[in-house]
Image (cartoon, rainbow, N blue to C red; front, top):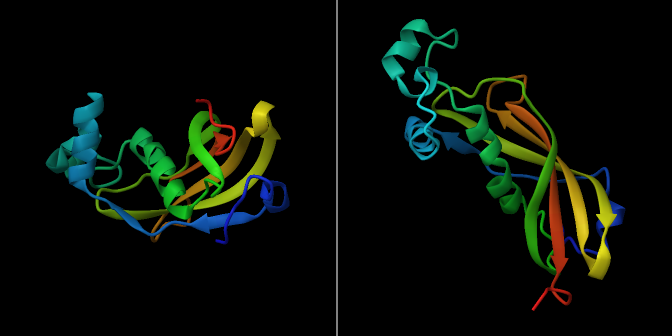
Length: 158
């Protein structure tokens, strides 16, 4: 992707920053997410019932599990500039869940820099457009516009 810098971000607006590797969303990950959140809806965790009764013919990942994959996959892409001390989740402007992610499917994240907003002390709010693609599906699992607060290494609070 090339080395991002805080000063160089403005030149990258509208450009794809990169794409993650494929990651398998297996039933174990789905069950672990269900356990962590308490969302035990059968369409996610009851494999046999989902095969019988689900319109998807099997269990699917929670929408919020797919959304939770955005941050680690964006980090893999390298969206945090090298001269930033930290990149913190700042918010989400828009999320749309467009296609189910069947248990066992592979997903990857495509990240485009949508905009930047300079803040005090050299901090920057970076908006990215994140598309979580599902292998073999024409529609992505989700599209999310996320915000990250980038804190410059030199200006980190002590």
